[in-house]
Amino acid sequence: AAINSGSARTDLDMQAYEERLEARLGKSREMMRVVLNKAKSDPKRVALAEGTDEKMVRAAYQMQDQGIAEPILVGDEDSITAIATDLGLDFDPNVVDPKSGDWDHYADRLYELRRRKGLTKNEANEWIRNDTNYFASVMVEEGDADAMLTGLTHHYPSALRPPLQVIGTAPEANYAAGVYLLTFKNRVIFCADTTVNLDPDAETLAEVTKHTADLARRFNVEPRAAMLSYSNFGSVTNEGTKKPRDAVKLMHDDPEVDFQVDGEMQADTAVVEDILEGTYEFSDLEDPANVLVFPNLEAGNIGYKLLQRLGGAEAIGPMLVGMDKPVHVLQRGDEVKDIVNLGAVAVVDAQNE
Ligand code: ACO
Image 1: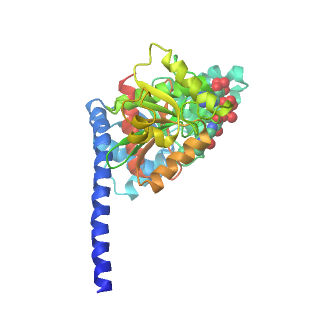
Image 2 (image 1 turned 45 degrees about the vertical axis):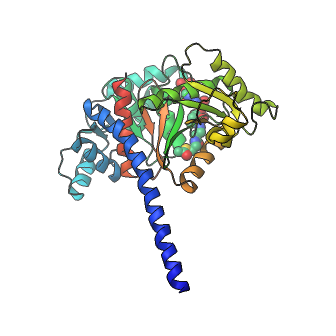
Image 3 (image 1 turned 90 degrees about the vertical axis):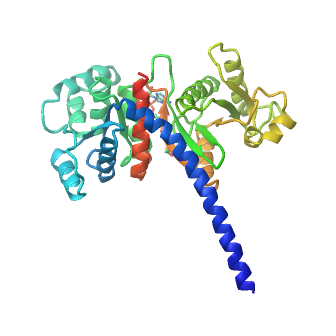
């Protein structure tokens, strides 16, 4: 009997788990459907800097096949063609090979952009032919591609540096930041900054919040932002808690900020309706936050990973915001679906250019 009741409980647990999983995946699929449909309405050219990576070739095939993007695989043409053939993919990939053809104009452009930052002409020639991250960055900067994806085979900072140096931030921006969209059973959360700024000051936090709110709207989500801290509205006052509080003040004083934002507040205040409405009913957030802005990179990176792994969220990202052109830097080891999803996000970014 004990075994029977145990297995009955297990069946119920499994059923509940599967329902929760389905609901969560449903939310995630719903969010991606918005973006995929937008992408398909006007697909753009996306340069895949790591074109000789098998996952990139698979992702290129899917993006092209589904009409999400016009992928450009950057890398050795023979290797890419061989990978596509070995995988049995029925497509003729668009390949741009930095080692064949005349790319002097890209080297000249890179030199022009970086010569006052210590780059020599020889180095520019060398980097264009041997570093596909620089090649793809110049390609986007020159308008020969509309967007770029990289990062699968590099550590994040070294994949990010070439686009930061060559493409840089948008004219109205000073900082790029990495945003993850996490989807749970009944809600979605945008987390920032999870990948770029080590120790942002109040101005940076405010700017990152505004970029993230813009991104949320591209997913048809109306942003409500919380500036996270270990303090609730002045319950602890020191230099650490002052930063998010000052960021809120900057945004409340900024006439261009047209979304709800408040803080500083603890993470549970931000996401639990009872706390927000009970104890802090004066808050500007009418409902729990869906944009969580972390006070520094340790908190942001650790926080989103715990939410994803222990909270069982589906994650889309990291989406780079604040750049002058659409660039997204994947995590090492990301899967084909992650590349395709970020490709679609990049296409939607490019449509807004
Ligand atoms: N936003 C926009 N541009 C920036 C930023 C920023 N936050 N930080 C640096 N830059 C620009 C600089 O202005 C500079 O441009 P310039 O040469 O034209 O003047 C260029 O990028 C290089 O900047 P450096 O000051 O030389 O900085 P560095 O190259 O050392 O580092 C980087 C920049 C890579 C972003 C660094 O801040 C970093 O490593 N951040 C953390 C990345 C990380 O480890 N993330 C966590 C893991 S990722 C994951 O989990 C998915």
